[in-house]
Image 1 (spheres, rainbow, N blue to C red):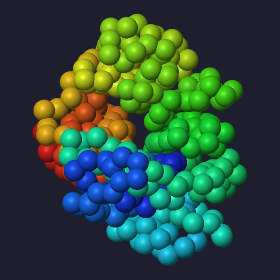
Image 2 (image 1 turned 135 degrees about the vertical axis):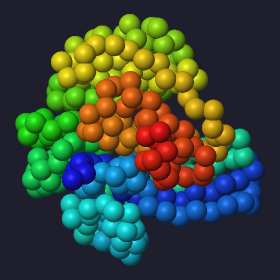
Image 3 (image 1 turned 30 degrees about the vertical axis):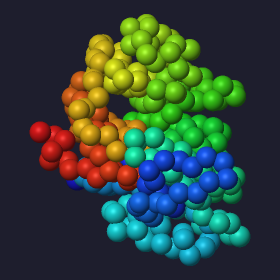
Length: 306
């Protein structure tokens, strides 16, 4: 039986427009490509999990409009359990617009009102979903009180708890880190977490000790062009560190790389891979995702396991 993973995060409609250049003020440009798809960090991670053979269940919020109908139907076709997707009355579903230029640079315009974010009450109403999974993947771009509830429910049930992002320093940071087994952060989040610029892997590794002492047994931290730095100290995995360079893939769009990485990392750890193998496969998943416009993963579990 494949592993069941509960994902607490965002679902939204993604609109990707590929342009030759992002227009300046009072200017317009033609889009060379338009893609509309299921998106949001939570949904993207759930798609990646399903593509890698896990059984994801998504805890997220849509509105009660026709866009929600389309997104939920697509998620179900992607192999995602949508029974925990909450449809908020009198609410429009979230929208993320990405302008992507020909050099791989992107700009986001988001409409994610408070009504399409998870609340602590939403999470507690679905406690059985979180406690019944093998792992709980927590997206820290959601309100921290809700995500702390999700992480604690997973921790109390003895599940693998994976945090994605940087806990905001609003009184919940210490508790979130204490509830986590794994913390994954991109370059910007690495700097927020460590106070160290992500251009120096050695300094990031030195600063990682404080984070490990706070709770997580495994950190995977973006260090810009150098790649991803994994540092671990835990009875399950021993102690060590590893810098995994970015792949040599032609980069079209980096927006979905982190979601693919987090999904693949979670799958690898659940199947018992040691951190070096799990992180290498996760970075390969990220590399496979940057080759096309948009954040939706397109992963082949056989290729990544090779």
